[in-house]
Image (cartoon, rainbow, N blue to C red; front, side, top):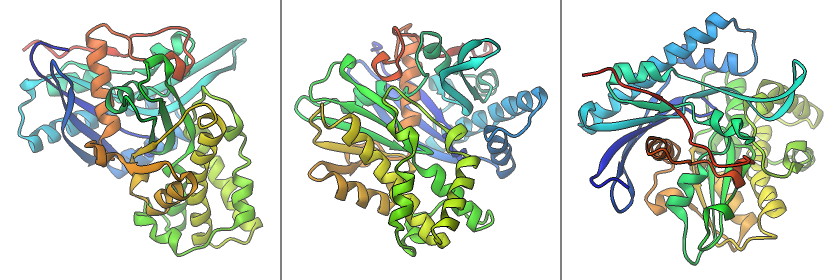
Amino acid sequence: MPTKPLLLLGLMSGTSADAIDVALAQISPTHPKLLAHTTRPLPSALRAEILRIAEGAPASAAQISQLNFRLGQAFADAALAALRQFRIPPSRIALIGSHGQTIFHQGRPIPFLGHPTASTLQIGEPAIIAARTGITTIADFRPADIAVGGQGAPLVPYADYLLYRHAKLGRVSLNLGGIANITVIPANAKPAQLLAFDTGPANMLIDALVAHFTHGRQHFDKDARLARDGRAIPPLLNELLRDPYLRQPPPKSTGREYYGAAYLEKLLRLAKKHRAHPNDLLHTVTLFTALSVVDALHGFVLPKTKIQQLIVSGGGAHNPLIMAQLAAALAPIEVLPSSHLAIPEDAKEAYAFALLAYETWRHRPSNLPNATGATRPAILGKISYAPPR
């Protein structure tokens, strides 16, 4: 820890690419602290291009390059707007940690040009962020883990460990962004005892269905209003729960390349097969989101680790149908939103990348090989220095 408090910003744009989350963190000699957070929506045209390319649509090198730099501008704008809102001059911020925007992730090696290859690509050019804000920026955290045999995900478990480790309580930190991921933190755990992986889809499929059925007028199911107007279709739900990804043992990670446009088409075909109305399909897929998490816990966690609390963050924590299903299926485990532990649901991942940036700046590794499958620890990220003042 530093001898005096440092202020850092964390920037995060998730799989849904709907907004940039900004967290203001203080790193002090005693402990890290989240001071403030805000969210800035991405311009609709920019979001559409991100989703188009992330779904695998044809794109030239020029388009990807231009998108990388345009998105860097958007991240810089979000950081500066947040600092104005927080009434803090950029000169007071020591570092920015930016996750960037994932447009491709292949955590497990697959054959490519004669060699097994894993790769990941996050864009949002950090040199632009550093130049426009005047703040040294650390970004592109995932490749260093892949370079030492990991899947490059999940990376948030390091922050989960700092925030949620408890001497007597076994906890699971669940983040429900576009994809659902968990960090398992046994009571009084050491870092090597953590387990973390992506359990499957979270908001991604729900958001895609809402956008499809409303012809783009809505992008998410606020308070599960549409889903609650429907009913569950048990045969459809059972078919979804046979998804092969759910059976894969950890370490594992997934994203839009699996649960994207092709999966949406699969859902629409299944709805037709089971004669499910739009709201019925939304209700069933919302339950599938919750039950895929439950399935992962029962299959890979609870037989080995005693858990007392499930701490939920991300946009899915605001979905009452998901939260109710988790609570019902996991009793007597206490299911509670992360805000009950002083970390707002929409701030945790941005906060985590501020913490990861600090570790990188201090030349310390912050991947957890037990979570990512890496062969050894790695110092994550790439540093873009601010221009001289």
